[in-house]
Image (cartoon, rainbow over all chains, first blue to last red; front, side):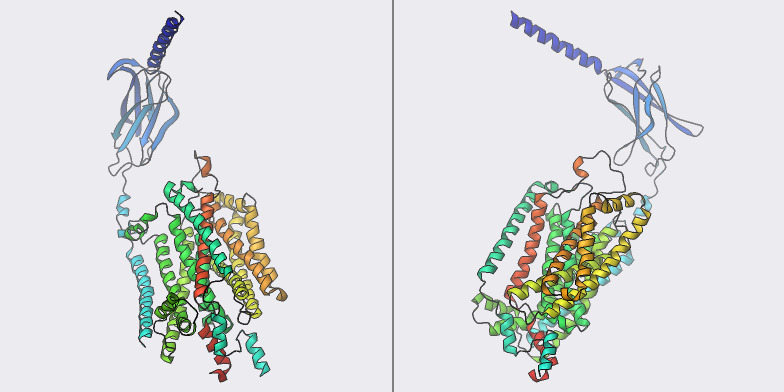
Length: 184
Length: 451
């Protein structure tokens, strides 16, 4: 009898843990609107509760959203330290005016819900040409000390190869003289 | 006559006939005695332990070392810089002293050339040991960028190795022929070896003439190459943006330090060669006196560059550069730093400037201090600078912040030293350690009736 009670207790506990986990991992969706006003570039993000792929329509107030711009090796955080949504689930962050983009100025903006106690980790991204177009690639194509080996400066190539030729020319001359000694 | 003999002995020119000189300088060649066998056995044990440590490094990767993201050059690179420094001694004695007509240094030519060859071989090996993937060594040549000082270093090390080997071999030719012709109680393979490497040398005047021309060309050529090898090694540091390395002083600082440690190593080699091969008549107290004076001079030059290197940054104490200087002067590296500067640099100058102390034993002890100081100095040049990057250190593992070499690193480093000593031992054992033909010539120059 005690064994049955214990098994029922375990089953109830499992159901309770499962329900609690579901309650603490409510799916969410984020919508991003990008706008420009008086020369300022704003990112407005709205967080909604969702069921599957559809938006339920209930905005999520008082939740911290994290704004990033994708860089070459990591994500650059932008906005304030805490960007908390208002009663409409909305929060607006200004995009920095001095961030470089790709050659067309495109940057990828990412907004996340992360490490929330209630909602699942969520991420949305949008690409827009708000960055400063990158022109420095042109310099990388020229001959320079920092270019690839094939684009080494001509003067350096001449100098190094002349020194190598001079030193090894003398070495081969000496080897020839040693050979001549053996024939004397 | 007595006056002439005294004068010749004073300048290190033995007053003996040719046969006696040959006998004295070739008597150690042949079957090895018990002492040398034991010495080689000890060296081989150290090399074997190092080989096992290197096997572990190959098997598990560089993680077995204490090198991490910040201290990415550990004692391997300190050791590499040390060996490159030592290798410069070949150019100092057999080239600079020869060209400046310092005839007293003739008996030291071969010792310096042998040490130079051993050191540059071990420097090359150490570079490969430092590589995480030695199987990719040739990628340096296939994909290397000529703009990189590392490529310059690889090129110049290869060039210097060949020149050092040539310098040693060319001056050995008449002596190899002497071994071929005069040595009787040697194994067959050794006789064949001498016959092959004597290159048909017949002691003809025309051969000597050609030999002297080659030696003169090599003697002049080796000087810029020797300066280049250590200057480029210093550029590996000077072109890397770290505190302590951002200095225009680094090239001459490295070269002067190299000549200093090279001279100390020659004194140590002189002491043991003289003692164990019983060559007191050839390596005289006069040689120790002169080499000690040379060591004082080179130490003073190095001291001058040391003052230049540290005074400016320590006066300004700017940012990370200041942190680096504080770490050296007062921080965790202070005991090592002050040991190097006082015991390894200032004390040798004070001791050897006193005439009665420029004798074999005091010179040997002082030279050991200089050598220990020189190795530790390379450690201090490499490690503390790497631990003070200009970018802030954030969120890294504790092991990144300190550098305490592992047993594998110590074992491999000890093996490279044992390897260098083994090369020197083998070369001394199979070749005359002093240049017989040059000593004979010098004697004839002073005493024409011997001609």
